[in-house]
Length: 224
Image 1: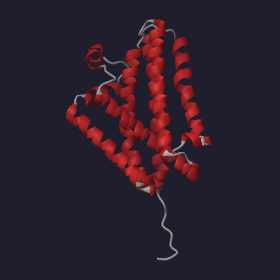
Image 2: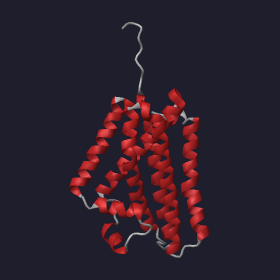
Image 3: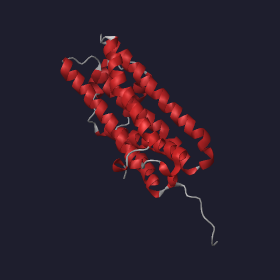
Image 4: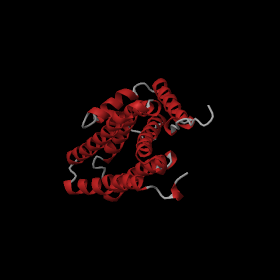
């Protein structure tokens, strides 16, 4: 046995297992405490507009179940991005914590910008619907990605086709989010130029900066 080196699999580290188990625990808690959230989640994922009655009854981004789903989504999507970076860059990849913080800050910044727009223009313009349905769509995306990142962590031989599936799912979900955002805005009478300005400035540009930072390396000061 001396002199034999074992292959190191950072994606299956104990802390990663802890992340996966925490996500499953949160999903089980949501399922027990608020099973009807899955119905709302399906509607948010597959409908261009949500019924106003559902919006009146369900809209509460401060709901602990919504926050739990959002935490699971952030954890699983950050794991997908981190795993892709590790697979691509090996030892030069950023830490999972730094990726998680970057994704969480990007989501928080988008929510703040949306609320600021509503305040400045003194009109909702579909912002509440877009923010809530976008949160649920993001949650659905994260739940769909969770099995992929678990398989990626423990079955290295599957990674060559799991990574393209996960990243394609992420890209399609983001594209759908932006198309639906434009659909909601136009339905509420918002000029197309304002919608494009928001999407480019508050969603697409920060996303490009995030992936550029991950591709070229996050500064050491931001890494754990």
